[in-house]
Image (tube, rainbow over the protein chains, first blue to last red):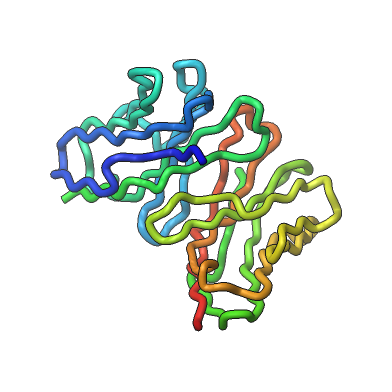
Length: 114
Length: 116
């Protein structure tokens, strides 16, 4: 069964460094999402992406964040200058255009900013 | 803005017993969807069950069922005949019908331990 994959599973970076989190959505899906969960807190929506552009973003998704679909398979989240408070689990999800209900999630990338 | 609250950070259940996970939400909308997702350790979140707010009948999927109380804004998940494979993090999620992007609003999750 097709799955959403994410790499790396764990990323450690120093404060101020740029980091790119990678996701490979399910191949025929057209809607893509990033969520994050700071330890002990809610899973929060960051951004949705469709037709090569951002369709919605949350307050968290400021100028430090960007998303890109550089080719036909990858969907990336870039944080330009990481802060300590960016430490979290980041989940990618994708959805088929015909699927009204379900988003399919990746296993997450744990980002640790030191 | 909508919010989802899961007040039980962790629950335990004996194998073969029944457990109920709680979820409450806040919204001013009348139509929406609610979901329970399960995340086994180091694995993807997978959909367990969904409920459309306009349906009065509670959703059921095999051993999983919900108790949807619209007026109370409550959406609990009941797992019957618990199995070791049910051990996971369970997330309750809300999805607005007016949001064109279909984004989810999640709770903090409940970690379920199943005791042999």
